[in-house]
Image 1 (tube, rainbow over the protein chains, first blue to last red):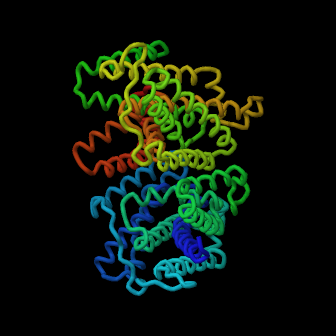
Image 2: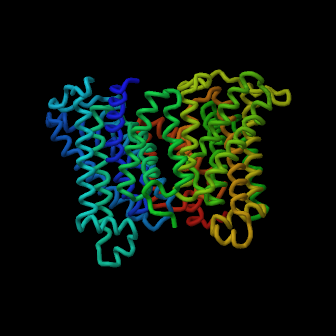
Image 3: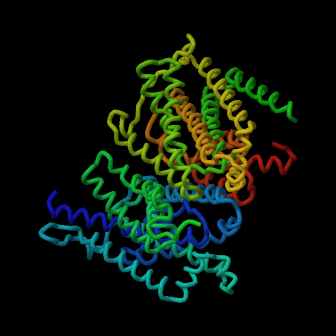
Length: 289
Length: 308
């Protein structure tokens, strides 16, 4: 493998890592704050891709879809939190597993109903349809856009969470939701907001993934496991961990496929198993109580 | 009540045994699936309901039993290949996976077991000698004590017998002093450790027993269908077993079996009427959680005062 190939793979891994980050950041915050293992999080990614497909067909513009699809998914997320999850916060984890598993089936079938079960390609924006020369090799411009856009979102999220009042409420909620409520914060609204926000980010990930990875109903349950791995590797409830985990898993899977195609699928599971065994709280999680 | 339960179990087995005399091929096939998934779900319930270990990787043993049976039956179609080898392989795998997994708890236990089962999936999916994506097909049914299980009636009785023995064995386990220690661990692990029980060893043994039974169920699933594919290892297989247990009501072996029956029947019933079976199944789960916590057994207990 030449240095140029190496760079190409690294960029592919980075684009994939960015998609994983947008997914995992919501999952990790939802887990940290609401104590909910949201198995339906992958479904929001899938819904985002299909909402994008529908909106591109309706408006003719990728950019309109990029803005509107996350809003649609965010609203779906808010509804799910209000109607389904709210009654479950004080109940056993297994109830949440059953419920969110049910939601996977439900969303997947609704999408099949509307769009059919086929793989659908999503047209990328014309602006980034070409390729860019990097160190003498052509690299798809759209992937570069994904990388830059995703990292920009990461910076904005970091600023919001670390530097604003809203962000400090979210961080306090992740640390101890009950205590935060005791401080006079309307924690119910924060829960809904975080869940909807996480869903919207997963939807955003789905839209921008569309032109690279296409849209198909099973895409959600496929990416869910990888996202869970990212969250565990990075540390539950940690924004930094989610970013680090995404980038590590993105590179591990991309390079695994290029170098060791026979065992590529194994690599990310081995990475996770090692992290759970030797650093159970994840790279940036707080120590287990 | 105490005497009625073994009596009821024997009556159920007798009913299951004569079922093919009254029913067509399709209901019998469904019953076979229910029996196998029922055993698989009961073995998972030993972990979830009795020991407090929520495993999301139980498919590792189901799939391993299935693959070992497929490979072995193609060479020597006898009882050793059909039962002994899959059980031993699953037990060994459970010993190794359990050794690592029980060191963590809660979500981490869920994720670690999930990771281990997905490793098996990855290997089965990519290994040429395991048929890669397509799996292994054309697996013959074995000849056990001179009887060929290829005959449908014989195979049916074999399955019912297997279900009866597995159910009895698990029931004996959860009723034994060992089972009570497991329940104590589920309730309050710290207290059990403080009283002096070697908690880790108890958990590991429970994990190995559950894995072994799951491996046997996997082997029978291969014998039922004549093939095995990587799907047996995939996380949704673990997920479905988990759903069955929750649907039936955790911590009751009968509930796990009822959950398996309800899941299988619902899936086949709804899919025969409409293409939208996933939608209806998903909706059922959601409504079930919201309005019937405690599973089928919980509903029965509440409505007609049935006690487990």
